[in-house]
Figure 1 (cartoon, rainbow, N blue to C red):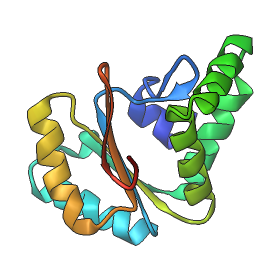
Figure 2 (spheres, rainbow, N blue to C red):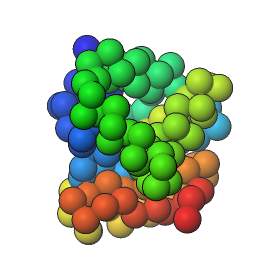
Figure 3 (cartoon, rainbow, N blue to C red):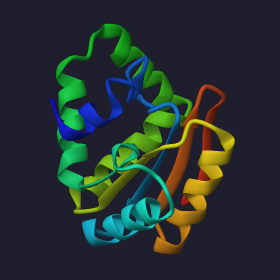
Length: 145
């Protein structure tokens, strides 16, 4: 099991689509930038078990793990998501960035207050992409509309 799968505790996908509910996820040009944002979060009061910064190859590993367990239903949902240009399109974009050396950051922020607190601490590190996943959907902070 990958480091990210352990961090997300199995909650990183929903119907085969990357959607770690209750998390803010951000991608940065490189691991050093992601680690800077991680430090901002830790200095800002988030616990070490709530925050992770990893190299892009860890995201690639997670995607490959998920793909190896994909059933027909998962593949159908992923195809529909791509067709309607929803979350799978963002996952594809993240995978490309990760494959090219992007740094990946995730922070557990289930409440609105935690989500806004996390974004306030992440934003100064200038992520390429940042979003929050919840039961209500995906809130895009930066990089997508």
